[in-house]
Length: 392
Length: 213
Image (cartoon, rainbow over all chains, first blue to last red; front, side):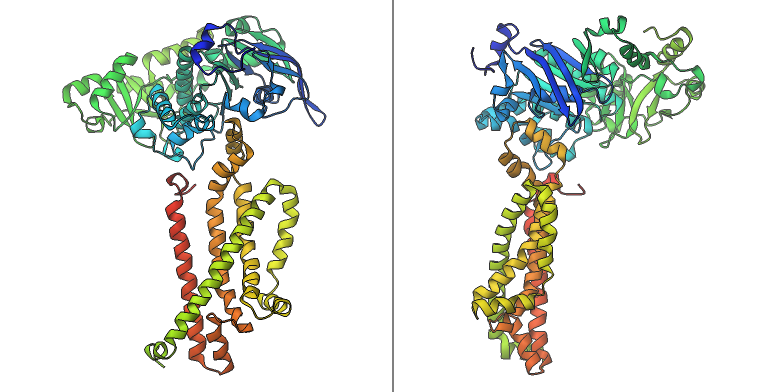
C-alpha cells in the first residue's frame, strides 16, 4: 500500500475510494456511560456525510474519533485500509481538515497566518504558502489585499467561519471534519455558507463528515445522512430516502419538528420571510453591485453598514439613473424603506405591505441586522402552506 | 534645603544609588522572570497539582522582605548576592501566578482547534498559549518590577547601597531631606519602569489582541 495520503490531489480522483473511512465495531465509554456503541460505518471517498441526531447521541464523539481528538476504547477505524492506531496523531491531524462550531481562529495571528497554519506545519515553502492563501481567499470572494492582513476580530462571524473552513482546506487534506460549523451563525449567513460549502465540495471532491442537529441543514447538504441515537446508528440513507422512509420512530419524531406548521395567527415575520437576500456593504461600488444583482437575477439589494446594520436598499434602475461608475452605493441608496421586526406578527406585516404598496419589507433582527425580506410571493407561499399544509 | 542644593550636595551619590538600585531591580526581575516562566509553564501542564502548589507559594510571598533579607544575611553575609536572591524570589510569584492563569485561561476551543490542525503540545504552547497569555505575563512583570523597586530599598539595611541608603541614613540622622531624597526617586523610578513595560507590551502585542478582547 502506498502512503496513506497522496500529496497531489489529482491523483486522488484517479483512484477509486482512496480515502474510504471504515469504522468497525467502534465503542467509546466515559466512565460507565457508553457514548458510541459498537458502531460500524463506511464513508466513501468524496462523499458528503452528515452525522445527525438528538444531543448526546454520540455524533460529535464519532467525528472526533477520526482525527484522534478522542481515543476509542474498542474497535478499529481505518482510512484507506490503514488502521489509524498505527498513524501518529499529530501527523494524522495535519492531513485531516477540522472545523469547529466556535470557529477557533487564533486571535494573535492575521488571517493569512491563520490560513497557513497547516501548510507551515507541513513545511511548505513560503511562496507556496502565500500562493495557497491567495487562491483560497479568492475561492470565497474575500480579496487578498483587503483581508489577509486583518485579524480575526476585525471580521464578521460569517467571514470568520469562511476563514475557518479555508484553514481546514489549506493543507489540501482529502478529508474534512466539521463539527456543527455553522451552528453559531445567524440564519442567513448560515444558508449562504451552506451554499458556498456545497459549491466548494463539488469543485474539490473532498470527503466531508459534517455534524449537525439541524435536519434542514442535513437535508440541504448531505449525500448521505447517518442518523444516530444513543451511540448507535439508526439509519444511513440519502436525504430523500430518510424523509420518505424514516426507519425508526425516533427519526420520524425528529423529522416531525421539521414539518411542524403553525396556526396562521401565530405566524411571525420569521415564518413568512425570504431568507435569501442579496446583502451588500454600503462601501461597494455601483458596478460591482449591478454585477452581483445580475448574477443572482435580482433587481434590488439590501445595503448594510460595516457592522451589518441595515442602511437602506438600492435597485438596478436606481443605479442606472443616478449612479456613476466607481462611486460607492452609499451615495445613492434609498433609506426610505419600510421595515418590520422579525418578531412582528405576520398579519401586521401583511397589512403594512398592502397599505404602503411597497414591493417588499425588510425584516430586521433585534440588533438591526437584516434577517430577510417579505415580498408578496413569500407571504403567499407561507400562507398557502398553512392553509394546505407544508408541501414544498 | 532646595532641590538644587540637594542635588548639588548629593547629586553624584544619588546617580550612583539609582544605578545600583536599577541593577538590583533589573537582575532580580530577569532571574525571577526566567524561573517564573519555566515554573508557570510546568505548572500549567498539571492544573490539579497547581491548585494546591500555587497557594502554598503564595504564602511565602507574605513573609516580610525585611525578615527574609535578614535571614539570608545570616547565611550568606553582606554580599550583593544576598539581596539579589531575596529580590528574585519575591519577583517570581506575581509573574508565576499570571503566567499560570494566563495559560490556563486560554479558550479551550482554541486549543482544540490547534490540536485539530496537527500542532504538537510544544507548538500549541509557543504558538497559541504563550502569545495569548502574554498580556497576563506582562502585568505580572510590571507588578514584580514595581514591587522590586520598593523592596530593593531594603538592600541598604545590610549596607549594600541603592536608594535605601538615603532613606536609612536619613532615619538615623533624623534628616527629612535625605529620607525624601531617597524615597521620591524610588517612587519615580517605579512609575517610569511601569510605563516602560507598558510601552514594550504595546509594541509587541498584535493588533488582533488589542482593544477589548
